[in-house]
Length: 227
Ligand code: NI
Ligand code: MN
Image 1 (cartoon, helix red, strand yellow):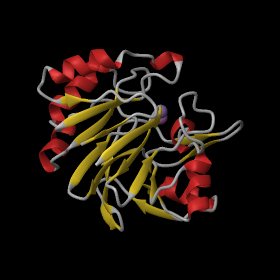
Image 2 (tube, helix red, strand yellow):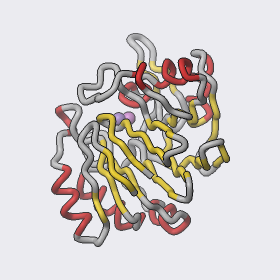
Image 3 (cartoon, helix red, strand yellow):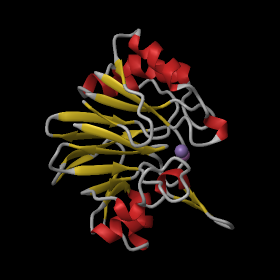
């Protein structure tokens, strides 16, 4: 399983046969390493409606004719804008051609914030994605919550992608605790550098997670690692 950072909270996961993309915010992303027209994926996994996640999800899904997998209300928003969707809800999962996707709890907001309208798009989510026997936990934007223990007990996680940027999500202290709750084989930090209020040193996080005996891969935009 190869995880590649495309900048901010956008990642691809590929097993060599299929590729999925998480939260494809590329246009306007100061860290983006690809253009939305260059994305080639089998599905778009969308955790919530904030602009630094929704990003290019709809145009990418429409161009490729692939579904957006998202919490139901957000899926309906995307469908209304012309995308094929798979609307799920927290705790539910489904088998798709590339593997299994389950939506997990995340404690955050989820609205599409326009100039004169805030359109609420249900709760945000995280994702457990299993492809070719490897399980990824993409936490989404979230604060720390105790049921990360339950997620770690229920799923054998090969790699957890965890926000560390503070301000809108867990900061480093809480993300280290999250890694302890989840006990993944590896972690990748996210959501820590694209914007001023969330600038953090991912290597501080890496040192602390590695002291728990968990591998940590800090992926600069464009970098990838195998898990
Ligand atoms: Ni957000
Ligand atoms: Mn965000």
